[in-house]
Length: 247
Ligand SMILES: [Zn+2]
Image (cartoon, rainbow, N blue to C red; front, side):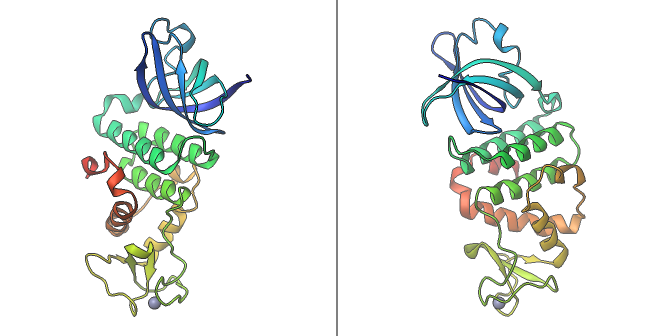
């Protein structure tokens, strides 16, 4: 069996057997995996702090066929994101990011961009700056990478191209925007103005650099929030345990 090294984000940690830990981790190159760290509760030498929840670590593990538990041989901590650990609100947001990633990405499906986005989001969150904005941007990027991007190119009813002029309405069951001829604005079809559509487009071209540049006006956030909530509830609502708590 070959040993494999991957930068990994620790997603879940469970006690396993008498002295082992069962670790869920998201790797840069092999997607989301589960593995056993033998004896990790008895001797911490091979795993100095590298298996702590939400940490970024380089893990060396034995690759197993799909669906099986991998053996984690050793690890080296890269970043513990200490800022997350003293703030309950930041920790909750990190939990939500992890849960969303689990729902969107099945075991063993590699997505290096998702890894970069999650890493950048945790890093930004740990600094405690613009935490709400970071979370919203993360959700939009993760949903887009997971196949639930909002269609912003044209009216989802008549097919007319959206030319970034004028207000559009969000139509949740179509997962896209509609022109005002096809859909009037209401509580169930919230409005999106051109700057908001532009910001959504940026978020749906996911890049870890975006987090450092986040700078949205308050009115823009107020438009994005109800749209994102409806979009998320419609597609993922019943699966998400931590979402309600955040609101
Ligand atoms: Zn239309």
